[in-house]
Amino acid sequence: MGDFVWGAATSAYQIEGGRFAGGKGESIWDRFSDSGRMPESGDVACDHYNRWEEDVALMAELGIDAYRFSIAWTRVLPDGRGTLNQAGLDFYDRLVDGLLTEGITPYPTLYHWDLPQALEDEGGWTNRATVDAFVEYAEAVVGRLGDRVTNWITHNEPWVATFLGHLEGVFAPGRQSWTDALAAGHHILLSHGRAVPALRAGGADRVGIALDCRVAFPASESTEDIAATRHFDGFRNRWFYDPVFGKGYPADMVAAYRDRGRFAGDTIPANRPGDLDEIAAPVDFLGLNYYTSIPISAARGDETEDTGVPAGPNPLEGHTEMGWPITPDALTAFLHRIDDEWSPSSIYITENGASYSTGVDANGRVPDQERIDYLDSHIAAVATARASGVPVDGYFVWSLLDNLEWVEGYRQRFGMIHVDHGTGTRTPKDSYHWYRDRIKESRR
Ligand code: FCB
Image 1 (cartoon, helix red, strand yellow):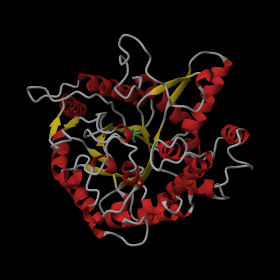
Image 2 (image 1 turned 180 degrees about the horizontal axis):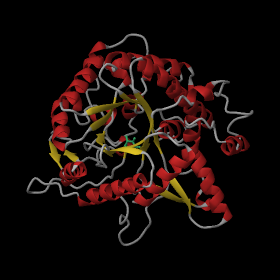
Image 3 (image 1 turned 90 degrees about the horizontal axis):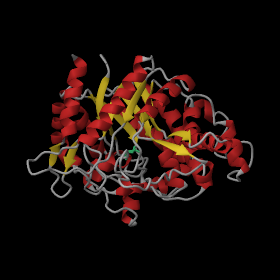
Image 4 (image 1 turned 30 degrees about the vertical axis):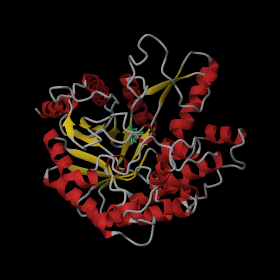
């Protein structure tokens, strides 16, 4: 894996803290945590806002080529648009310089779900004006960092922001409406499509988007289960992959949503003539976030993520502590499918990793062998796809640090570096040392 890019990933709300530092505005996640809907808030998180130099030193020691992080819109434009906050931009400016000094390539993501609350108050992603605000934000950031940052990611996991945030209501902003979800998803896609040329105009060489997935397979060979799997795949995957890659919204899903009364008319109401062309702005790479796959049965329903963990003597066997089944082969299969169906010229695994709560032992070690096994099997799955010609060019572990796992709080630990959330102390886990060696070995 010669010129393969090895990296690690984080996101702003999950690690930065510094909620009120340097003129930062309020985001929908600040508001969501204040409303008591999370076990803990990201007010302090990993205190990366203050400890970023220590974190960059840990990355340098790890030997990664690239670091994927996200920029908090509310640091740059506290009200979402209008007045630029130089202190917020200064923070990312220093971070980027610190990374480059260590030879680590920055891969910033513009939107990892932390919409400015001021925009939410005006309808958030359901309001088409938020698309213009996003482009203004993208221009501001690339205007400041574009002379040094060449790789950019517009959005992280639009499915999550759209459906967990606007339909299921379990993520910020906590809305529960099909009308809102379909509008929000469309505007997120449109903002991606418009940001691509805006970033290029500001000097970006390579622009991509990080899409999530739930690889689905029928629980049985019955016609009903096969049909339910196709619908689930449309809801969970194709709804975003198809428009980004120029295929428009999947016709079977548009028909199904209309039949189920989620909108009236020929297409979803937010979709205006010309939008799909803008959404299909060619990207330089696809970021794929992969964690698990899911069996679908008609009885379980075709639009629910709720897999549950099977009962049994050891319910977590074969699952991470998120309850997610460990299925590396499905990653290889999905990479082949991406290549066949959407054909991006380049793919990066922008997130992959596992939650295990292994703590620091009496010798100061964190023996997280399960995480090593998970990462090893998934890197092998990527190598298999690559060996048969799928253009996978990099892999980012989620995550560099134990951090705020959204509504799960701090108890779910995805990091290669253990973080004591009382003191902020960082302790590299066994997986950190393993990954460092794995990267070295690949360069031999
Ligand atoms: C992804 C998110 C990331 C993290 C991992 C575990 O859906 O992009 O922020 O929470 O899951």
